[in-house]
Image (tube, rainbow over all chains, first blue to last red; front, side, top):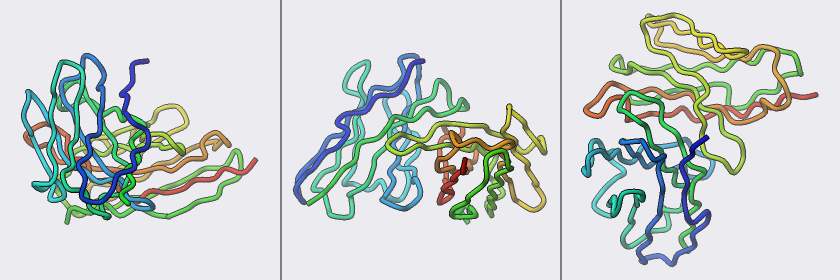
Amino acid sequence: EPEVTQTPSHQVTQMGQEVILRCVPISNHLYFYWYRQILGQKVEFLVSFYNNEISEKSEIFDDQFSVERPDGSNFTLKIRSTKLEDSAMYFCASSRTANQPQHFGDGTRLSIL
Amino acid sequence: QQQVKQSPQSLIVQKGGISIINCAYENTAFDYFPWYQQFPGKGPALLIAIRPDVSEKKEGRFTISFNKSAKQFSLHIMDSQPGDSATYFCAASPEGNSGYSTLTFGKGTMLLVSP
């Protein structure tokens, strides 16, 4: 069964540094999403992306964050000038259409030191 | 108003028993209610989902019951098995610009099914 893959599985970064989290969505999916889960807390929506532009974003997704689909397969989340509170598990998801179920990757654990 | 409240936080059920997890919401714009199952080290995986035009949906041992007037929905796992031990999240989404994309998750329920 096709799956969403995320790399790296664990990223350790110094506070203030930029980090890029990478995702390869399922190949025939057109909608892409990022979520985060702070340890012990619920999964929170960050952003959805379709047709090379942001469709929806949450209050969490401020100017520190950006997303990009640099080629036909990758979908990235960039966090500029990371803060301690950015430490979380970041999940990428994709869906074939807007109303189809979202399929999640296994996440990237981001640790900010 | 965007919250989805989930209970209990944790649940222990004997093998063969029924596991019941409840969720409540306030936002009447929510129009899609999925349940996700998450094993340690893995991402959430869609288990079953319902839209408010039906009051119940069953897939195998998993059933969603939906009460639109009370703004509540629940997951029932019949004949619970040790392999069902995982964290379960309810979620909800309105139909927005990009479909049901803005999932709001509950805080999760850690289910342990004892052998």
